[in-house]
Length: 310
Ligand code: BDR
Ligand code: CA
Image (cartoon, rainbow, N blue to C red):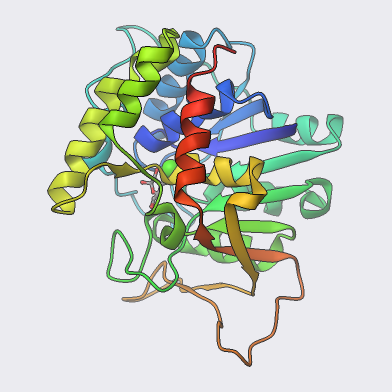
């Protein structure tokens, strides 16, 4: 069982990742950190609160993360992929709003639970802040999983940059340089985690859980958005879900231990670089980049977890 703190910016794939985490018996969600990213932080907070309500898990604290990137610039949002409010056509009910717990709660949770894993599937600003403000946080947390970067494949927001690293490259560079026991799920594997409407139908036929009932609308929106971007695609990649799935199913992916650099300025902003030459050396720290994924195993795991009634 993994005790996790989930840093998210829901966003459609973040929302499905939250559902997946709540339904997975191998994951215990200790708290969810809400930050800007796919949408504004306030909207992300309301979306998280709504999902927790549907799941009957309002006991899980929502912790207030960052409003904007380290550069101080106004963030770019992506309504064309996630919808204006982040859940495609779905909106939390009118007058519904999520309540935030103070950022310092993170330190309490980490101290009280000896074996916390942090999973960051958004911009890395809040995680970098946790490191900067905390003493020894890199040692107190058991391991870190982040969705970000792109190796051997084009980026998804610039020719070479992936959205999470591009959104706050200063934070991402700090994270990859200072954290240990770090697992990175980049676009080269997350792009492969395609979920189709047939998969969603299978899930909904088997599970009447209110949490899963909104999946069809949300995923139809997300898949349509991807179809406009990538002609011929039959579904859409659940980047943030596969990051969690790799965490609980280590045999599903193959990693390589390498140092990573994130470019922080200029045309290459957010680009991730690692040395994969035959002559290159493994990272001194335990930094692991996913290079391969077993797609069939992912789909099987996704459907199994999402059809649970937990
Ligand atoms: C990542 O960026 C966000 O838009 C998604 O939620 C995911 O975390 C993919 O590049
Ligand atoms: Ca995300």
